[in-house]
Length: 84
Image (cartoon, rainbow, N blue to C red; front, side):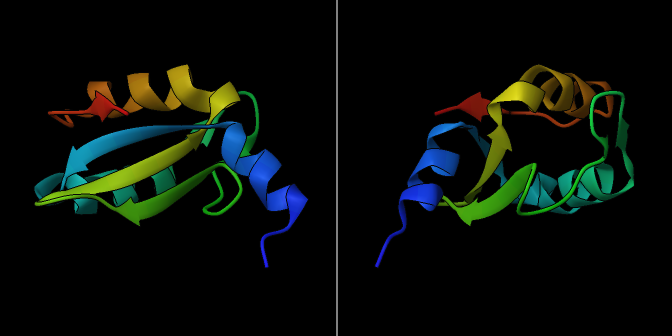
């Protein structure tokens, strides 16, 4: 059974499609990075991973942190980030 709280949280997330070859780098960056807004990013609260089609995975990011995380990933050299 889907709870209303879970639906509200999913609506506040932005999704990015990233190639699997970048997944290890993305995980390392998000685990070690710190934010000016929230401190350390927490998986499940600020971001989450999913499965995409083909050789991609889905990175779901809290809407408030979208710009901050996207600019961090680009600065660290992650390529082929597409929004869904």
